[in-house]
Image (tube, rainbow, N blue to C red; front, top):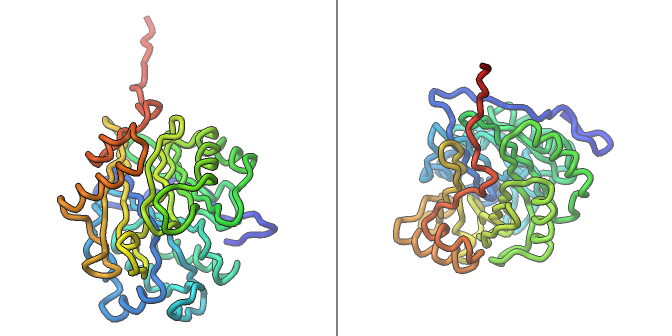
Length: 333
């Protein structure tokens, strides 16, 4: 699996059916997962499954996270206050065992050990029963993955925009194929300014472009804090889910985040699940009912007013364009 002249190699987008006793009926989207630096030290001290012990992923769920690190062939633990992230392969066993199924690699750290480190990351993810998708600088067909959910197919496109945004032409080419192969198009995007709860002008402009190209849902990460939720035309945008697992402890906001559950079937909606790692560092858990209510009230206060009531309830219906109509069968006389 390599990239030659800026073109991603053999990581072809395909529907990957992961073996499971129970059929998958929903997709969970998580924010940034970083298993290097202090997180790695805690995993070695307390067990490789330590970060995942307090958040249960149902067997009926696919689970997608932004994997913010490289897995180089030769692992060197990341020192404190440094930003070249290396994660040992052994961590992926815990990620898979926790119930994760897909890892987005379109971010600013999967190239921390160059092309060789990225390619080794892709191979390691596949070899641990997980599906990698996305690249830190290239947008092409392997940038998206297809997920079978009930009788619908979800296309999830991973994009990174921190250094430069993909061109409209490159995105349009991918959307054209992805829309032919999926019923719902989700863009999973690494973007925005760190530690602010509102999107930047560039985020809003890029969201507008993605909406014009056909994105039904946009789910963002990178700012390390939760950002607002808005409707951009017919596209529902979660600008940032914040941290899922990250060794940042300096504020309340960086130790809180969101998990988003996409359900498609008789009802089509996104459920908002606030999480916190305040009580145990690097070990996120769903908030208590009281804290959840407080957090959703805050999220509603910074978000699109038209979504306020739905955000407070923790469930946002998908736009009408996703209300799949039953197939019409015309009987011959």
